Length: 320
Ligand code: ZN
Image 1 (cartoon, rainbow, N blue to C red):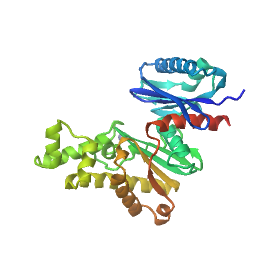
Image 2: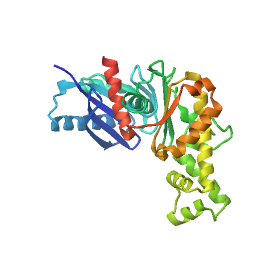
Image 3: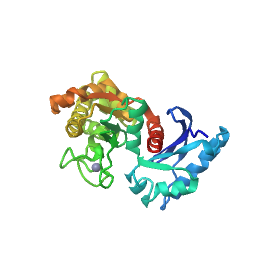
Image 4: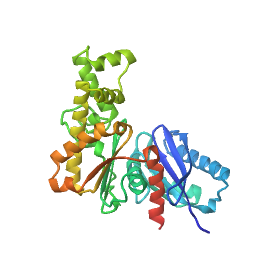
């Protein structure tokens, strides 16, 4: 029998995205469930498998046609062992995720960090075009990152490789979720952009940003980009600073792995060219000319599906 269906799972702090995919990466069915946290980590896994069985049944897919399960999870992960050192958002600590899931389902299970499966997905069917050296950065509430070098995802000795969001950019900067100060994430995430905007608002209560905050009761990263697009000076400065810091970090990373592609995803990347162009300028300014000449910077293409598509790729690559 030809096993050609793959289950792709992308576990987040509040929701789990799940998909049934063909081995071409085509999504046959996708849905979401809530992430229920528990100390031993098993609740969310049991919920996932229960919902997969329901959908397989709905689509009349035999369990024997399923090739395997790919899972992306937030946290520090040993991809080879399928072992989660720690995933704070889900309450996991030293959890043998692939062993547990595999025993439960009787299927091969492969696990990677969520940012890593997103880069695998983008590299397979999105903006990456199967580059063997690529950097992906996700600008959302936080900043995630994934690196592929020489065709391999980099995990490092204990799962912290590619944690781009926690590269220090301001030694005495704002405090970060990781317990340190001045990480990239404190500036280039949606949260960081809002914090920058608040500083401008404090300094000038008559500014466009301040007026918008008064009107809406809050300010968002999207507001900052919208105001920058219509020429608001403060907002343009925030976008410039954000792009400059990110371009600086990407240039240094690029000199390390010499990628042919850098893919920028996440909610903040919806700003498109308004953000991309200044990042490119900054990148060119800080990288070796030979490094930047070989490297194309693009906005991610798969949106929220990158994770489940990358999870499917993980299964395909490991089994074939
Ligand atoms: Zn940090």
